[in-house]
Structure formats: structure tokens, C-alpha cells
Amino acid sequence: MRIEQVEAIIQRMYQVCQVNCEAQLARFLNIQSANICSWKTAKNLPLKACYEVHQKTGCNLEWLIDGHASTFDVTNLDTDAFLNAFYRAIQVGAHIEYLGVNRDIGRREINRLGLLMLKQLYHLEDAYLDTKNCMLK
Image (cartoon, rainbow, N blue to C red; front, top):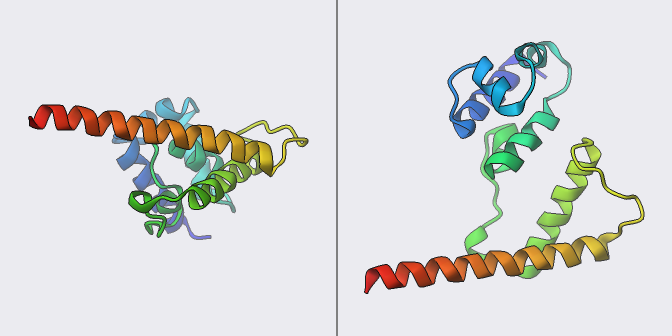
């Protein structure tokens, strides 16, 4: 890993967190500024911080890490695609120890939670469209 990769990640974090410097980013992430400096000399990407920025801002995690937009299209979201993406997000969160996931929880339980979230997303989208239609009338 090169320092340029980490610098690029930090710049993308600045952008999505709407901050201008390491001190502001550190405050946003509730960490010490020295942690951000240490990312530049570490041998690993700051994946835990990337995941936290993703959780707090909703930015695309793939874009945050490698600068490329995901091919995952939310405008044509189907249930299986959503559940797979949701399951992967839970796995990543557990792997980097951002989420405490009980080892007894299986894919079925995670899918059930994902379906509840998807229903809420559709409900929010419908509410937004209803509001938008009312404003257009």
C-alpha cells in the first residue's frame, strides 16, 4: 500500500464529512488527530474509519476506499440484491469489529432484518414521492 492511496482516502473522507483538515476529521470520527497521521505510515488501509464514515454519512464504501463508484444501482433495487448487499455490509462491519455480531446469528436472521429495513426504505420513498407530488400540485 502506498501513502498516496491513504491520502486519497483521507481526501474523500474530507469531502463526504464536509471537513477541511485532519483535526476536523478527527473530531467527526471522535478520534485523536494522531490516529489520522498514523494511517499514512501503517501497512493497512484505515478500514474501520472508512466503515464508520460510511455509516455516519451513507457514502458508498467502495468509492471511499478505492475511488470507484459501485455498480450497485439503487434506482433499480430488487430484494435479493439489497439483501446480498446488506449481508455483505454486516459481514464487513463484524470483520473489522465495528459491529458486535452474535456468532449464533445466521443469514436468515440478517435477511429478516434486511427485509424490515427495505420495507422502511420503500415507505420513506413513498412518503417522499407523496410529498413531492403534493408540492407539484
